[in-house]
Image 1 (cartoon, helix red, strand yellow):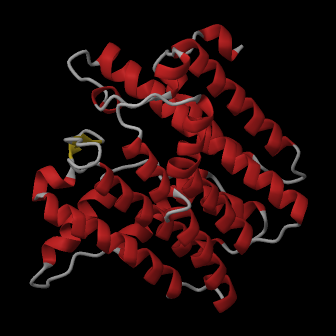
Image 2: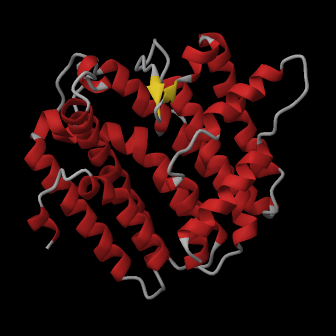
Length: 299
């Protein structure tokens, strides 16, 4: 199934899972919906559905766990935008939630999405054994050994220089852990062996680093070259990025190398990988779309 069809399924289900509610504290759900339904690439739930489909699993059963990962991701963005974190006023061209409703409401909307994600998995069509395994992997990927740990390291390293190994470690946790968990969800809900599982998890790991490098390049080159009046958040907060550490040229070369490694991992699978390949191309496409990589590098 095409990933655009998957995306439509995800958008419809997210709208159902986080409905508006006529309660005295209706603003909680209003804020959560504002951040959750305000666009987004949906790469994480798309990875879960694509991996599930690749391994012959039930897409309808996988839909709610896939959406649960997007709820976790959205909560992390709400909190990441707060003044005590990255202090961002805009996301996806719209005011961030704390600018719209205040910091307190933004914190609570994020808290709601975080806890609701686990409720969504518990109420899903998955078996009790699958639910336990899904929740176990999600808590690890989103918690202190994953995304939250990476965010803490990001805060601690503000105004400090990092080595490449330290930067990779940070983003493996802050960004990569949830992306890899998205693939792992599909593995849990599909049918595969240990070698294929290892290949898919390696693919998820490479994709996570690729995603972050591209984000760093776009953050610098789009904000400063295309929108000269805006300074990138990481530069304003004096954080080490792949661009500041390696330079633009080396960062782009590293992105291409990771893209090619990810492609090779998919090619080793004796499966129909067109949907995952399409998602991989979607991740790297901003580099080509904004003419950041010269044409000869795509020949």
